[in-house]
Image (cartoon, rainbow, N blue to C red; front, side):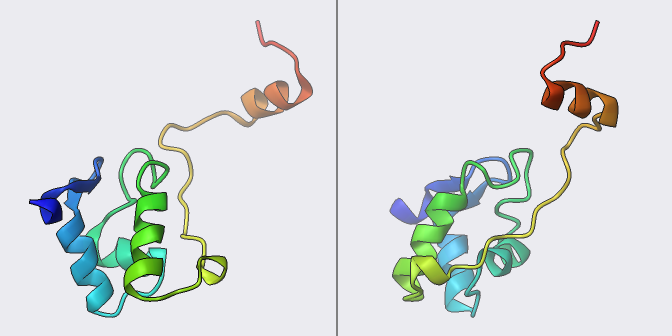
Amino acid sequence: MADDILICRCEEVCERKIREAIADGATTLTGVKRRTSAGMGLCQGRTCRRLISAMLTQQAGIDPANLEPPTTRPPVRPVKVDTLLTAKEGRIRP
């Protein structure tokens, strides 16, 4: 069944749950995220964000240009600031 298609693989959220969240009043990516946990997994929505955005624009009639960006979280694994600075400067750390 089409409603059982996984949209967010990380959190295993199917299309039906996202459609229900939108019908329940979610009008932003963050609203869908809070109601379903879609976009809260390891990839932080990088895999499912476009699909959820398309569902919001189609079902809720929101103009894609007016769609609010979702909230984001820091990386899953901590990274030392020195590593980021070295990468930015183009130096390879020994």
